[in-house]
Length: 181
Image: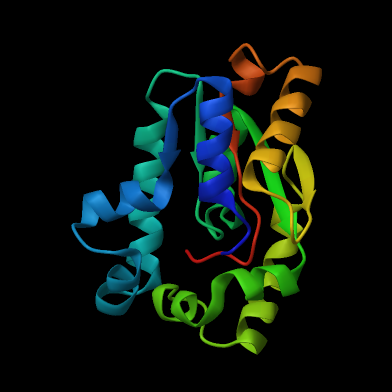
């Protein structure tokens, strides 16, 4: 939530010439409602099941691709196992203050697990151990443009040999942030 997963993911996909997939958009298409509506009408457990099913479906697509997950996706072991088997994970790590400033008042209405800053900080802290399981961490500056962050990720992928879209870099995962879903 507010870490830049979708925006940086789109920029990374464009830079690499790889398709971009937003997992929350995939869930919304399956559910025929927004993430917020799924949480409000069905609750978090049904959302997590839809999310897992969408992730499985996305992973059946031919690589390479860049996938932006929801902030909570990476915190569930079954999702983490799928992602580890499919590609390289990247944690976008802006400061919590940056996340709060990016979200603003509208974001608080759109994000089902962001009720207020205190609860969001607690959620962010609870998710940190899972985020630290990512293959690579990218600290993101408050004023850093998404294209700059995407370029840093692309350089890292090239350095580790994942640029070609082979097994280690078939997909770029971006779990970071306090997570909307």
